Length: 260
Image (tube, rainbow, N blue to C red; front, side):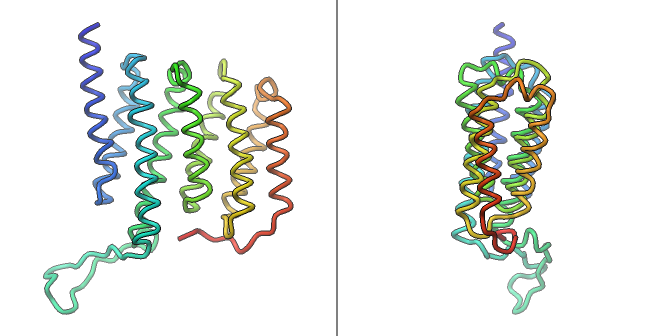
């Protein structure tokens, strides 16, 4: 047991170092850190003890979302349009040539949104792959609520691609595990409460992406058709879905566009 515990601690130290690098100022560095983190965890997470998984979820995965979201939000308000093109050759020249970067990533804000999207996709993937272990944690309900709060924040405040990653990620978890075993009913209920809140925010937010709304509605309908969805259904979450559809149907929308 001591040997396994020590191996777990070695993995956790490595994961924490990658988590810290995931908010590096250089997009190449932080994206490499995130990809390495999620790849290593997916490949070796099954050897971790359940006690170590508490740390993985609460001290690694959820903090990754928290940290990346913080930097993304700060970047979008402080240096939203700051260009990131680098000078080529001698930077002291009067008019140095600059490296051309695709318009989808040519500002600090856009690059941080890309990182936010990557973090959401990775964390969702980890919860989906290791859902059975996650659902057995002592604070699984609290951790699920925290994850859903990040999904809601990303859907409402993130770019169109960030919102798509958030909604698509949580839907992937539900589609994979509802009907595959004893899915916690409270997880199902909390998801529909989150959907209701996203729809409420969407109706109150000017310029909310219609593409995101379409994804949300399509996902809601698809989830309701899952084989075991009827067993989890109750009056409360049915009401949440109906309120969502009613709000979206009665709202007045402007031209759909990505915040960036």
